Length: 549
Image (cartoon, rainbow, N blue to C red; front, side, top):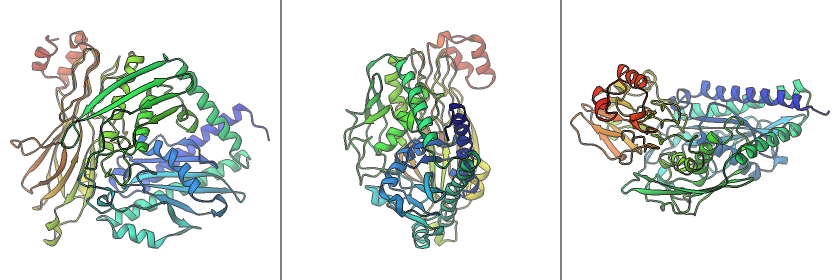
């Protein structure tokens, strides 16, 4: 049967709907709030060669773009002739999956008329895998929890019960982990079922023609977008807080006829704490940042990803080698878009925003060790908060918005329901957005305490405490992040393990985004609105903008 371009486009649209339903199945079935409420997932459909054809809109670049390569790896590890209907493969190897142990990646072969026609895959974050937990204190990967190499999770429809028991036995949240694994299984199965139904409906026996159309159309569109850019090389440098000392991230962006190459040569070496980043994760966020500017309307798949290549010296902090500790790899991995935009702003200055808060301001919390002995609750919870994005050439930055991660902020009611904590305050942080013709997005003021007479442990790994988001083209920097215990307490470093006593309050301020253009050029009406809405104080209007509307 010969398919027209119109027919292939209709099937492509249907495939996008299928994969979105697949992703929603994972979110609806998940146990952990970071998945169910925050959307820390990915879901995708792949052809028989392991090439990504479609991804769910909901999902993080760190999960989606690593999944695009991980399926190829798993596809090569297991012989396709040995696969059976109902098989599902799994790994959490950081250098295959999504950069740290807490992310589980599943892959399921899809059978139609007795043949493997493609694969469904998904990733989500499990809240606890044992070890030292979700913090930067590990000295190697073995400190950070349970590592599962590529293996069969489900064999012919039967779950590997021993593997599931091992995962549960190595977790402080065994029930949540079990539920999240079954949610991942349901996600794969939902995608496989809908894909088969689609093939039956369109009377096709394989995905060859559709895959070729999707990949070639997307690749061609991306190359056309690249051709509109100036060719050349641009370099940038970004200083980040690091653990004990600042770290320099370096990038050189090369734009040619048919490729965009990003090189992290010159970036500082790995450190002895868990903020190192596997290259697959650094690549995922770097390419996402490039694609936000280059052909952003082209769907994300193997074709649109093909022209982008990222390299880095082995052993630099953006190309960590096993067994380096990587639990908090997102801390620096999510800073790479600002590094990339430092290059791209020189090539296409009219398209690139100012720097933003960038890395998630997440709060992994855990019960104090002695609490369980006294009858207190055992829990492990990862709260997610966000700062402001950088101002854009023609628009203000977005406040309390997840860029580049896309992970939604934790919900207060849900968080209080699953762990013994209380939120006393969560509100936008006035004056935190960098001043400019376009203002940076605002961060948040958050205040938390224990809901019982027991202490809890906090694991911090955040950025922008010592190096706030820089403005662009005369814009001012955003406010730095700030963490302290008690109103009069001294500021805490952005990384480390801390105890919050039962009678204390944790004060947590997320950073603001940088401004764009000189503050004196801001529209008086916009400044008046900022003051009326409490985003800019009258004092800041006088001293920074040097005028009152």
